[in-house]
Length: 139
Image (tube, rainbow, N blue to C red):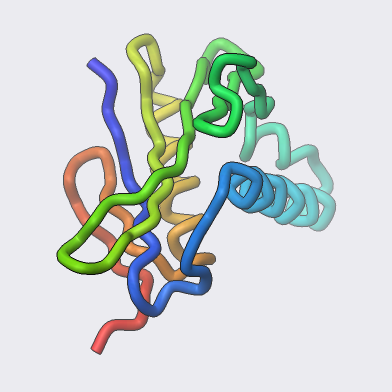
């Protein structure tokens, strides 16, 4: 059965709305950061840290995209955006889905990406296991 994690852009987050292109930009920045780390270490860390290719299906245009794994340890992760109503406010979110057939490697990498994006956007992250991380400044 598939599992979902949510990165919610709550009050105090860096941005108040996000699109699929914004999520792709975050993933590109993650890849660039790991490339720089790899250069400092002297090995190709970017391929180990982000073993996926970003792919788009024609029927999913503007709704979701997926990360396709480059080796047998990683298969796929689906990422989409949306919004929900919380009282009188609208809360935009990023949904990260592990579809049936995902590996333990996919889950570990999805957890890592959720935390990284959540920290950068100062968002609230609800993980696959139900645990919530609050990276946003709260009073």
